[in-house]
Length: 342
Ligand code: SF4
Image (cartoon, rainbow, N blue to C red; front, side):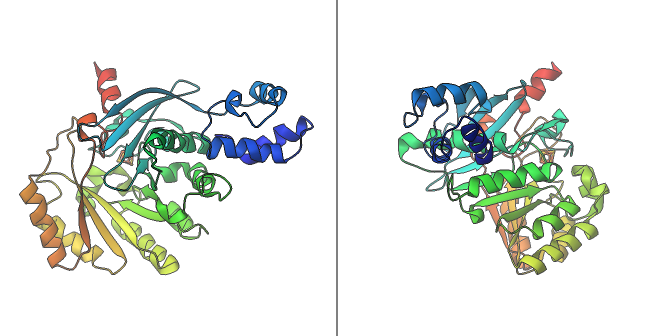
């Protein structure tokens, strides 16, 4: 992926008309072309000159694994400087959702998350995020399908890389390029309060999700260390400011850990916080990621959901496709982390 302004600069500096830049940009974002040689609408000399100046794709695909049910595929890429990046494409029913990584590793260090165990290596650029989506679109094309949703919920804390994440959203939304509706994109934060306030003021109608995982400060401080910096009172004050300003629904993600955060005490604490018309809680059963936690039994998960619903919380159990390929929530980077530990 190359931003349009960069293409225009290169094209005009070669003395070519501006419409050539539009042709290149369309070839990348709509034609899904990965090299200049494939841009057959351009004169051969221009293709060669651009190839000498610009790199159309920022990530190299290393390996793709497909889940048994065929509803999830996880791709491992390498950045130009050799870092691993993982992206998941989930294709249940008619949707095709790309789960994008915004950083290599993550500094937040959630107790149940494989990516957190990597630590932060570096931020990804907007182009590296967009290339994850374009690669997924390439995989879908033979089936005549398209990416319907993008969620920034892969490796990394998007609000620790705010500017590039928002730039990626704008690039994906560009009506002259990939043209994905802002409402089809969701950015997920572990609770970076200044990021939530800034996000509330964005002109794009993007969705926001907050990874909650506990209803009390004591437990959340153990599971999501960021809670010590932004405790629940501060986090929910920011959530209130967000819904007041945007009037948009706010999603809370909750990885359910058996007998840890699915207790009656947590349900009561969650109810006090979440019983609001614009709040919606998504429960996701934990996927074994080598930590000290267990996946909840299906009946325990249903009971927890019913307890919350009966108390007035809007709540859904989300299935996590791809747990057999370590593509489910909290499992990205698992194999590499385990490999490094050996
Ligand atoms: S769950 Fe998200 S925020 Fe927490 S460590 Fe993993 S990638 Fe980072």
